[in-house]
Image (cartoon, rainbow, N blue to C red; front, top):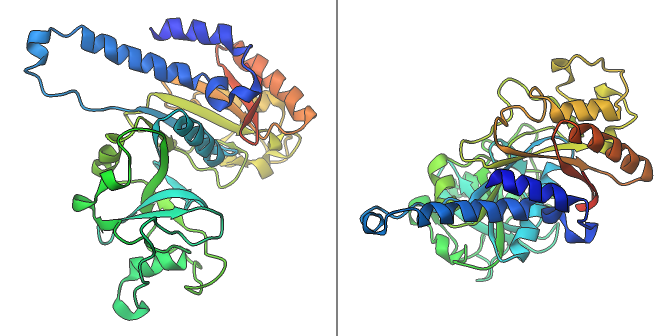
Length: 353
């Protein structure tokens, strides 16, 4: 089934227009359709007399991991939004760490108290709020350090959507059907060095969310159709060489997107490549199309730990004509190795290979 899908995607990819969005450009819709068909075929092959005696098959969403550099979080949010527009429920999370989102639905685990807080922010810079109204902020002297940290990060906890993990009303947050996207993670503790600020300050400090405990991650997965996991960190560098412990690709991952930022082109490796010291490139070497193609195709680069998983290359920051020409060159080099993908500008496809 997957081989048939690959041939189908290759025939269609050249005809996909940029207006089709990232899902079509990267073949994600076909991935999801193929995954659903395979499960249906497995179920259809069961002996009905025996299947009624078996426990129900656990719900298992399609899981996509993002690795590399250059705009993974923006790509994750774009994929989540497009999937929600197709009436899918989508979990955005991390196996490493991500910044606290500026907008949207966020489910935050307080690991010190084993409690969950559901927050929502409509516009960047606004405090988080919930549909049920705002809960009165607790006094700062009550010893509630985690709640105080949330307030310092510019958050206000919505009334009625907060509680212990074991008793949290997940179904009051995540709908049973229809489009819905949310980010979930554990609040980074303790506060990073230098992360201070007035609780009511107009500019909240940058906070991080880290990986969820496996039981909670599995619980959330059971309530969604697709999970997108940022599995690598690049500290805002457009390119990345993974360390020995990277990327963190969980066993349930079905597909991997390797990301590179074309803003690195023509600039020194030392400025653009995170963990450059792990590579054979000198810091003053200039980034070329060939170098990016090597990063995206190498088992020591973006394809590390991909194994037999589905894989796509994503060329982010394809904003100029020069970058588009370079994207076509990179795409041709990757295609010659059987790797396909797309070049994106501000979350929209410009070239598909």
